[in-house]
Image (cartoon, rainbow, N blue to C red):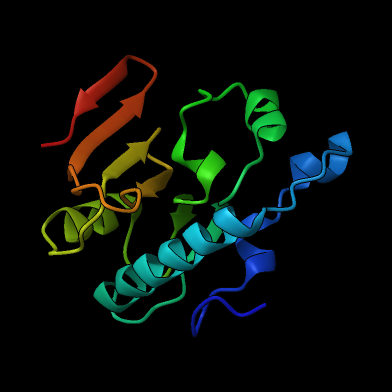
Length: 145
């Protein structure tokens, strides 16, 4: 199922970990609706990054998968509104982060994780985007500056 011009349901719900652990990571109708919002947000990200392809390493995660990955139950991944990604052809991950932080994209959270990938989350229906920007590393969570 094509969710947007460049993103499919399969891409945004695929998980090697789910496959390995035999976890059914199939999103429900409400989660698919959220994945459409996520896909549209990722289209904006792609456009901001000079239309370069972005590689999704994690999108939707059912609660069982999310727990297997030792992530919080409140993660926006569990409702289909978050993705972890890289854009290898756009300089480096720090430049991607700066570009998105300076953009008008209405994200809820933008997190540079361990200097290797970016987590982006979009607000739930009816909620105002917080535009929180952070970086996570071995020393913990810090505000992004």
